[in-house]
Image (cartoon, rainbow, N blue to C red; front, side, top):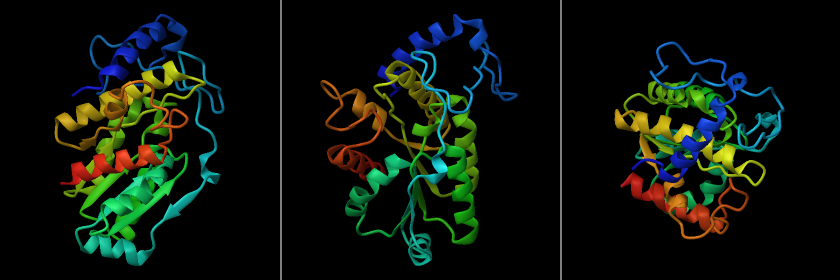
Length: 248
């Protein structure tokens, strides 16, 4: 199932984006440009605020944000058993307590860092794999911080697959719709979702469909996502249930 709500918004807003030729300087990697599509926009300058509906703005200095990781013993237990490794951002940090309950019979290792984008998260994953090994199942909760430059997630998913090798790779589909930039955020969430759909279609990754779950809720999403990004306790429980269903 495609990201219907996000894709509709993404298609409309993409049309508005390319109506401004100055916003469409190509930075697409060689071999990834698809015939008939406009060139990839140039990412905004560091620190740029949202420019609704064209841009979600630019990522901030996430490196000073909260970081939590499991210890070596937990990592080893997960890697040598039937464990799960959670690699995440602040969405993953909100998910972690509920996930602990859902997978209590399996070792759970984790590395969650608020604000961290996917490339930096995969740097960490590569180090963890080399130094301690990875669990048989790797769950990635990243992408929400890639809305500021969403055009390269497909290559990052390929990179994640190279790191995890033959292990199972699950990825939570990002949902971002902040009050400051709801249309731009939905558009960029759709771009990220399309990249994940393409990867799933060729078997690179399995998707945990958080975006789709939220898109199908009646009414607004405020009881599941408190600020357009982060899950409430109810939302974290729902996301943990989606993960558990995917693990079976």
